[in-house]
Image (cartoon, rainbow, N blue to C red; front, top):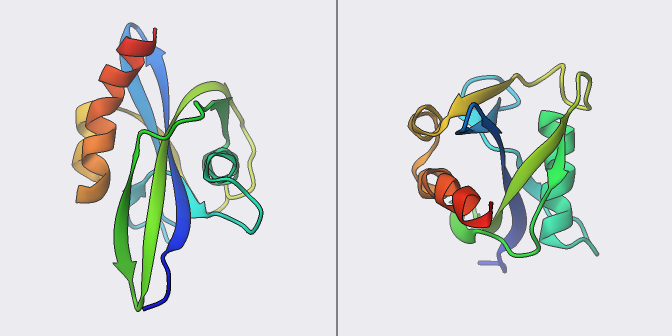
Length: 136
């Protein structure tokens, strides 16, 4: 098997009425809710890719710490992927963005978001509230 493809994912969050909410987007075909995620381009750092994906897929801008929350691995077809997962404190929500025609964006409470996601992301989203409270 070839070396692992590098990807970056971002969990965009905001605090609304003293409650942490995360933004999810639909997959390109609109079948499931996911977090913005994509490949790390040549010469790009995973953090930069996470920031780019948040803007392209979800129309969200914000503050992303240098250190990822963690990472996970998965196999897609015959390639292995390693995904660095970052948190993003959203500072701006765009009305128009690159993939707006293909994706919906929704703010959700943590338990609702966790229920929508695949296993590998649930723990990161569950932990986001602790990360936010620790850093505020």
